[in-house]
Image 1 (cartoon, rainbow over the protein chains, first blue to last red):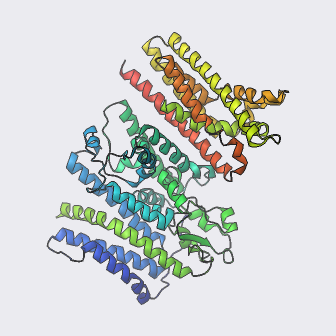
Image 2 (image 1 turned 180 degrees about the horizontal axis):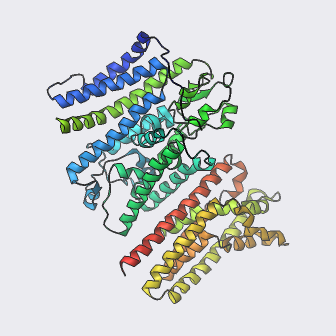
Image 3 (image 1 turned 180 degrees about the vertical axis):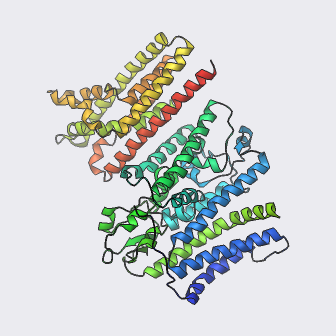
Length: 383
Length: 207
């Protein structure tokens, strides 16, 4: 399995790339500063400036080099790390521990995350209540804003949410990049359907027990956010389960396979987002006239979305998260970002620019607050 | 009861995939159409329900008789849950699963009217790991009504997979649904392993 991508060359004029970056520059400036830059607090101002420049340099580089994935990944991984850092430091400040107690659950003080969404739908429809102990509106990570954000992103990006919006995906994306020569190369196609089985089971169990069972028992990201206080046998086993899943699916397997194994084999929201790939206007297309079937794209795909048969028939599966790794790997530009309804092989640049603007704007706006917070905390620690 | 329903609904798919090839021709045979298939399916399901109630009684009686001490009541079901759950996971990933279908016996039944009845019997008494797990669940129940409820929940969960049988020809993504169902069976096995471990550790800690 060749996990390396071709070295990039500067393929666009500096001025043209700068022009593409200008709208992003303006929007992120308004979003980050609120339209009124305030330099009274030095650490905050420095954090804002670093984030603002960093985000825009990455977007500029995407246009200037013509490469997508490596610059997306920098922001995506920074987002995941900064979210965990911010969340843990906030929680430690509040509770002096990463674990939450029954009192925190009763007071609905648990920050909401998008992975709960599939489990709340049936109970919400039948009982008119939310089965997650978080705040519905207002406060940190409230339910309403997270649901709206996910819904909009999923309708626009489809499973692209998993590579451009999910604040956990950066963990296994990061680990999958650390080892360039994977030791496990052959993985059965069967496992690709596991997230759907997990989705089926957690939706069912949540509907029957009115408990968000995925968060309660499975979610591996409790290891880098917060978890239930260990008070008995059951909570100790729960801790064992999430620590094993984090170690196995987020750290070890991505290192051994070079793939995003947690996203590909476990995440129930990923399964739901795969279905939303059917409605999104953006897609990855294969130009069969240019394609030589070298299968570089199949080898680098971190989500098992491309297969040899798929390449032959010019089809990308619903598992595609539009990370752009395959597009970057193809030296003939046979695989490219596309828009549904536009034939493959045509309007490649227009489709890419449009997709990049929408998806990058989403991750830039979504992640900048968290990154600023983390930088601010780090700067405060240093000075 | 929730565990039993989850076990039923998740393992029902594996059961259908295992015996589906043996059962489909009989349910689909002839030109009687949806009405005949629905009648046969009802006989098949009713047979299963009656046998499950019989097994619920047996399991509860067995539990009351042999698991008299609290030590036995804790450790044996705990160990059985883990063993049968491992078997269930193996059963879900075993590629030779289709070769062991007990429903193949119906090829020897000459009276075709008896086929749904015989199918119901062999399908229920096939002693697949899911049935062994629900039998274990039955032995741990405090009273017979709870044992009936556990088996009823298991029956309802597993039967949901048989209901679309009359319309099975209209499904386009049968293979995908089968695959997801098989994986869900494995996950149900994982749930019961955790249940077994919880019972065992809880038993050890509580003496």
